[in-house]
Image 1 (spheres, one colour):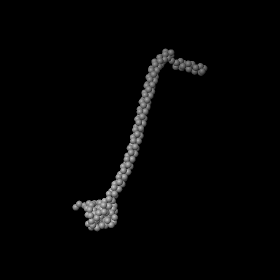
Image 2 (cartoon, rainbow, N blue to C red; image 1 turned 90 degrees about the vertical axis):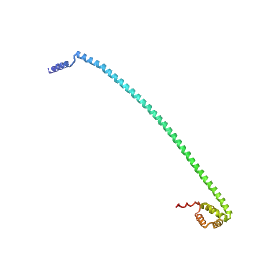
Image 3 (cartoon, one colour; image 1 turned 60 degrees about the vertical axis):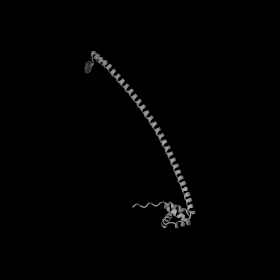
Image 4 (spheres, rainbow, N blue to C red; image 1 turned 60 degrees about the horizontal axis):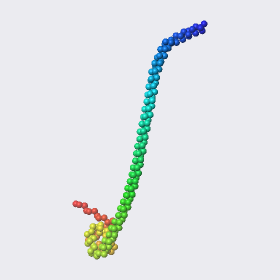
Length: 194
């Protein structure tokens, strides 16, 4: 009996819980109206997702294009830098070559000038050696002391002594002192002004 009672109670309870067909139809109508609304919202979401995806693709495409342009410019800049560095290295090499040539030319010119000067001094010295000591002494005495010392140094000792003997003793002493120091003979500094 208890069983029967429980079964009856469950039946009543189930009957009370089951919606009536009218309520069921109302629910169904609400669901159908919401279904169209949900469908519209779903379609809008899909359209937005598609628009977002399209925007992302376009943005990515634009970024890729800009990146390609940046890479292209970087490569062009690198090429220009390499070209500039090559030109700079070439310029330095040419400049170094020119400096070496110039130094060589200067050394050659100095050597030639020295040879010419020595030949000239030798010629002058031989001229003074051929002159009489009484004539050579006053001429050398009037020359600047460094030039006179240079000429006398080229003469033989006997010719030099004869010429120095005919000079003013003070000038002869100064020349002898300079000759002892040896070449190059430099003019003494001018005396200080009072």
